[in-house]
Image 1 (cartoon, one colour):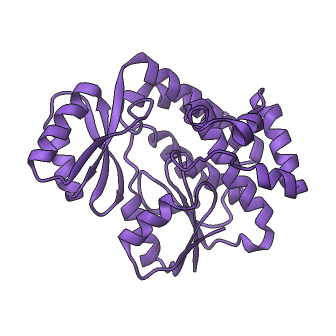
Image 2: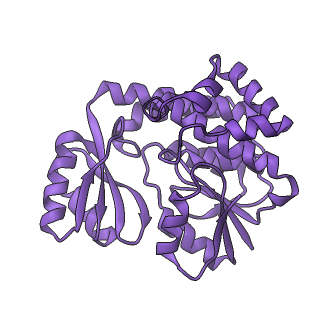
Length: 292
């Protein structure tokens, strides 16, 4: 069984999508429609922008979404998933790819998500850090015992957890986690504390937009970040999508559950094609993985 997985932020690259635009009428049409929906020329930034410009949340999120969704559409019959999952932002890409959302509605939600998260970041100084070399539960327990806001946000693969919170909370956690034996505690160059309680204002704003958007049952099960379990239920999908902005990305459990449910191959759709493949190799090296 084929599991198609969709990356989130950090999978962008300079010139992303330009070759698709120049070689495919399908891609050109979708990119042109995206410029109209977003109200600005995102293709100019994607094709010709600098790495620094691509890092801006309001650009990164729609850019990665577009690259993944258009690539899936271009693949035609080669895109035939038995199950899908998306890392953080990638969950919206996956939902569009399996027809739970229209392309335009998915893009509007991505733009709303990016803008809401940016506002939350600007409201309070915050950050994230990658912790390497400790067990998941150990990282979570140490974060839970710190008074300032800091949580285990992304359980990416065994031995790698990303924490998220206030600057003081993350700094304290990094100190304690290093003392506990972490091989590395690396503060990330990100706009704010994604997947933490500090994203609550963004969650409320995005939640209203989700409620106003039409969803359909996906063409195959989607494994969502906050539960790591498969679902095709529309109301459950919407609820989990709302919870995602403040909840943890349970990627390790998601991949393990996909394997338990019959996945025999992983195909990463969009972005650099390296981020999720690296995680999957550390979760279970037996499973072949490729890019679309």
